[in-house]
Length: 258
Image (cartoon, rainbow, N blue to C red; front, side, top):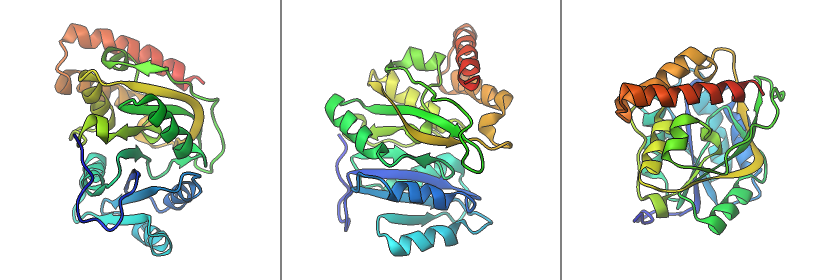
């Protein structure tokens, strides 16, 4: 069972995990969306992964004005999973929320989702969202989510978007992200493989930014990484992996057509 870390000046109910690399363009807007939350009991842990731009300067300006914003810095580049694990090791909250450095939350995101988790007690919750472009313009309809996902349904449908997720560490225990490219997806699968519950809050509370050169928009690379999770992390047989991949491809096509 997870316990609050000892000898911390402040313990937050929600720890927000944000890896940052070359994020100077968007991270300020991301932080602003957190500071506008109607749920005030949080800490925002931003891990700079040796950015060559002004990411550190932008974050430091916010950290000096609001003690809930904490900047952690890597000496060497460790990638998104390494940055998330650095933040997880420093996090004080029972609830761990994930927010990428170019995405945004609507003001009631934490309030609505924490209340949902306190009422329903899942290990993981996730929400609906809409996609935005580089200047913040909406470019999709609301992306719906299933009410509930178990291990086998998540294998077939990568429906959990990272910036919508909150994990309850009092249910999961301490955890770290796997050292793979799709560390988030592999982590959710690891939880659900233990028969833990993942529930969807069907409210539009997040803005997921889509950039032209991002990995998430390169469908062939994304598909290859999903296949690697099936075979190398979950160690599915070729037949089982192909069965899951067929469903994944169908669901991904439907999601991106909205």
